[in-house]
Length: 298
Image (cartoon, rainbow, N blue to C red; front, side, top):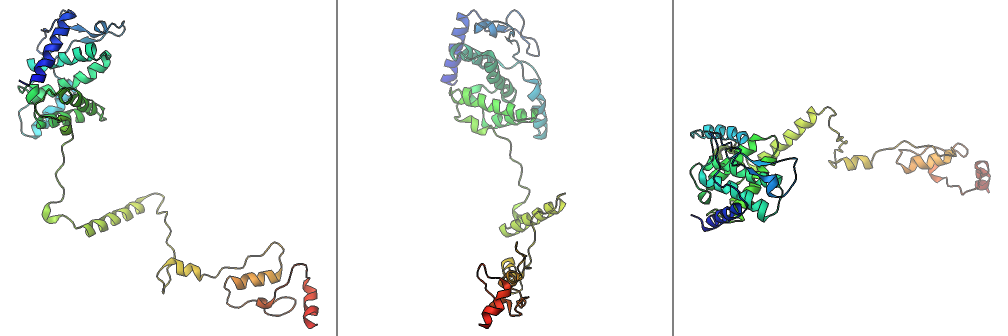
């Protein structure tokens, strides 16, 4: 027997006897403890009811027990019959309450969350004592708890129990059993002979993204820019794009001439007053257009 496990149980029995608790609980075939021997957890920590919490069940957890038999059936293992926990797992279950409530000074609700993991691990271990529990049993119990709830909170509580009770107190011969509290990995969908290459995987990923964008109700938000034949990019076509001249606030024809020429028009338009090329017109501020021809003739 693991020496740490023996000391853990012996200390709990001494503390329970000092508080007047009956260690040998009487229960029925389903693990329900009789009213004469059950423990009043609320009174044990000195709290006032309501609520009143009892240690009144030492059987298996019914929620995870159904999923456990389903997993064992898929693994071609014999189903487990519901009933009270074995004596060594029952001792550990009661010792967790004693250490949490009397030594750790925690509340009954917190102690029950930690102790529930023992009830979920005991049916998987069967006749195996807590000190000799195996990683396979930890993983099977974790998967049963994981599939029994809609969220992963129950599985997280189970992993916390393994970490804080079996690992931290060194009750098991194998250290760090919490690392095995993980879901079973699925088989690889690609066998080694037909496993795609990295380049082919990238092409498959891009094809899937394009198909997903096509199925989207809003369509693909990324616009396709025109490509230039020489440069091969959309930047080259945008740099040579001819923009229409925008009228200025004053509406000056000479300003429009300069604007159109600056933005790459093929031929600059002639000015309305001088008839000259619009590119050669540059009038300073304050000069009227009708005086431009007279000043040029001088």
